[in-house]
Image 1 (cartoon, rainbow, N blue to C red):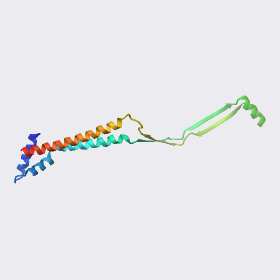
Image 2: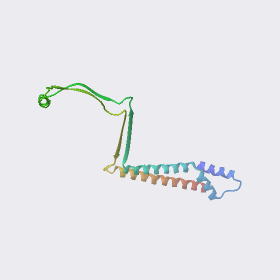
Image 3: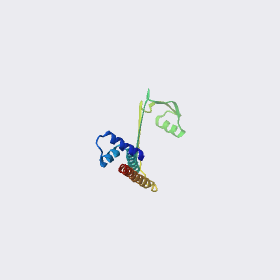
Image 4: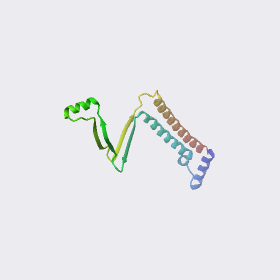
Length: 165
């Protein structure tokens, strides 16, 4: 890596006709160093993971909607006779004067419409996790701190190597 930094500094020196000051060389090296760019991306990833760990404390909301359209509305059909118990048959005979042991039934009823839709909304909130969420947040925060320090170390290495060259 140090050879690449030195070569980068030499290449920039060749591109410019005038000699570079130390601060200019450091500035150019910091702008163009791949390792620094990767370190900064690692810091961004660690920050995103920290935000994701914080979101474990929030409730989870799930919404589901389902719709069905049928060619025709479903029908419930019932045709035939319903047998009556003797006590009810006797009571009907006393009221109407006609003996009845069964009732004729002819029933055609729509169960639902042609279009059926259902929906649900679920909310899940962790009441007790045994410290799992706090541990995840702490771990993500430590990782974020580590990545920041790694990026700073890489930056200082580049500055050191340019100063040595």
